[in-house]
Image 1: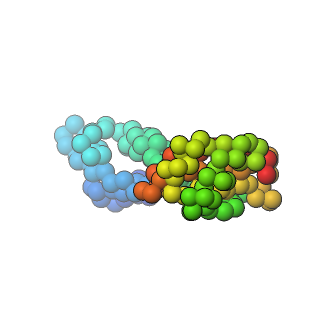
Image 2: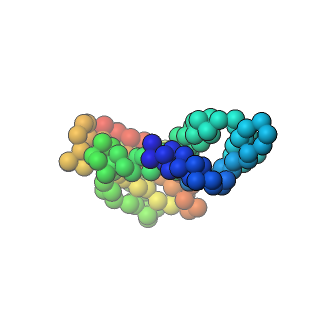
Image 3: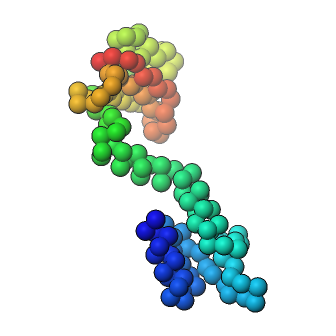
Length: 152
């Protein structure tokens, strides 16, 4: 709500280019009243502008990421603990090929083309059930396969 109050104040001070939550919009005063432009889209009320920007930001991956980071800082989301990374073909085949509950059970075809296996898990301080996650990546960093197993 502070962002809305600041934008309202900027408008009251006569500014025509206004920033709201990192998104700029312009205001044009014509004989029919004010028109607000966000990019090429026009709006006829400041409330419409705020709602449009809020909706756009809520769907934004960056905004979602920032919210997740804040929730992690507050302890609401468990932060994965890096258990190990396997980078040799032998280690990737050995660890990645083990069947659950001791490993992810990736196929030989998957482990053969993998350049890295990343194993993460829940921390002892996390609330909730324990888990271990296995992710296979190729040489370009593309994820080939992933599996999450309950337990530790």
